[in-house]
Image 1: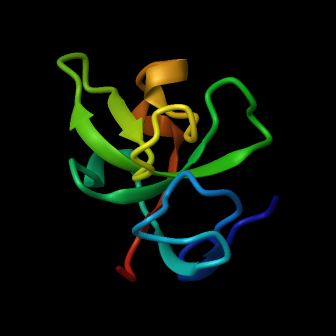
Image 2: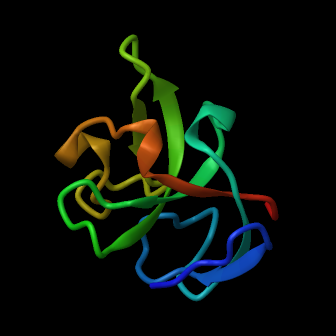
Length: 102
C-alpha cells in the first residue's frame, strides 16, 4: 500500500477492535507522523509486527521503559482485538500516522 508523504489521508476501519469508540466502517483521518511524536491515548496506524503487509489501527496504552509502544484496541472483549497483548509492544518505527479526527 502506497501512502501519501505529508498529506492527511482517510482510513476506513475493518473489524470491531476499536468498537465501541469507532464501529466497523468508520472513516478516520490520519496524518503521517514519526513514532517519536506519539504518546499514550493517541490512535495510530501502524505496520502489524508479525504481518508487515498489514496495517492496523490501535490506541497507544503506554510507552514501555525501552521506548516501545504498547497498543490496544478499544474493544472491551480481550479476544476481539489482536493487539500488544498478543504480539507485544511495537517499535516506534512501525508508526505510519496518528489519527487527527476523534
